[in-house]
Image 1 (cartoon, rainbow, N blue to C red):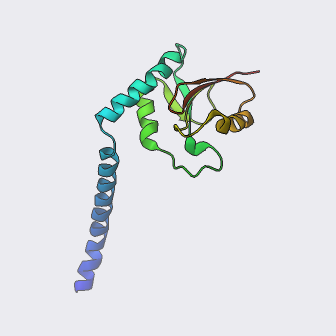
Image 2 (image 1 turned 135 degrees about the vertical axis):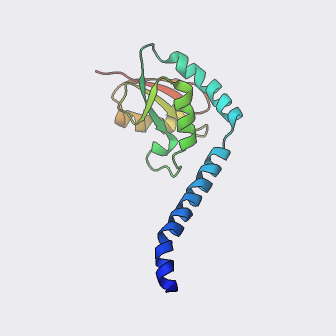
Image 3 (image 1 turned 90 degrees about the horizontal axis):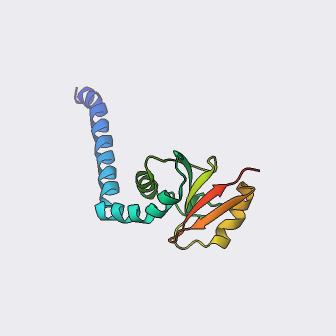
Length: 141
């Protein structure tokens, strides 16, 4: 009899456990950055927003984690803050757009990134905005 009750309650218990785990994850993610971080990031992205031509509503986004043989994990918080700061420009990860925002971290130097860009883009212009942030224009042939 007790086993029957336990079986009936098990889905509810597992659902509650999943919801609590997700709530804890969201709490730690949103607690990791606050409004001052977002404001600083907005200021850092302002020159990029100004450098993008009018009429551009889509740009690529590359991060340090995209560079081959790099063990850095993708930073979702920085991606979302960049998306917010550059709105209404939609960011799409990868090389598909003619304008690409590169967020490679302050430790990366252009000589580390250049061979990788040369393998993926035939001809491009690049602007360095400091802090490992670049604006890359893919120039079609």
